[in-house]
Image 1 (cartoon, helix red, strand yellow):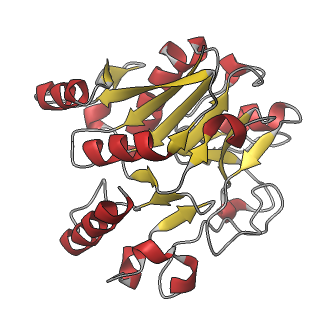
Image 2 (cartoon, rainbow, N blue to C red):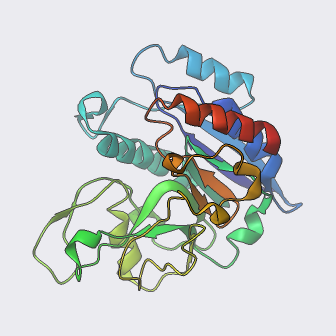
Length: 275
C-alpha cells in the first residue's frame, strides 16, 4: 500500500489546524492502492502542549520542530529564515525517507475542490509554484514557494540535494550573491539538469511560467472578482488579496501572520460552505 504523507507547517498558532485537517480529509483523494497520513508541526517556543494535544485529538501525528536548527536560534531569526530551517528539518528527517508522495503545506493553504493526488503529480518529479527574484533580471533565481509542494518520491531524482533554506544564492555563471526568500536554495536543484515539474499557477495569471515569464506575478485577487470561485465571493473585500492555485487551493495570504478580524470572519463563513 502506497502512503501519501502530508506535513502541515504551523508555528505557534493553532488557529487553522482543525479547518485544514478537515478540508484535507474531505478534498484530497487518492488511488485505491494509496492511503493518506497527516503529520503536524509542533513548532512552539513556549508551551507546545496545546498544539501537540490538538494534533493528537484530530488523529494527526505530531512532529516536534527544534527551535535551534543548524546552530541558529529560530526565535531570533526572521520568519523567512525560521520557516526555511523548519522546512529543511522535516525534509531531511522525514520526507527523504518517504517512498511514495509527500506534501508540505503552510498553515493558511486549504483545498476546496477534490484533487486526486496520485493523478495530480503523475509523471512529474515535483509540483509547486516556481518563483524568481524579479529585482535582478536578467539573472533569474528560480525557486519554489514553500507554501505548497508535492514531492513524487518515486520519480524525483537527486532528492538529497533539494533544499528550502533561506540563504544568499550565487547564480550559475555568476560571482554575485543575491538574497532570496525561504525556498531559495531549491534553485540549485531546479537548475542542475532538466526537471519534470508541474507548475501551479494562480487564477487570473494562468499563462505564468516561472522559467519564461518576464515578471514573477503570483496573482492576488482584489477587484477582479471573476477570478474568485463563486463560493468565496460573498462579502469579499479587495484588500483580502487571497490567491487561488489551479482553481482548487486557496491561500489566505498573511492570515497566519497577521490579525485581520474581518478577513477571518469572511473565511469562517467560506469554510462553513465548503466543508
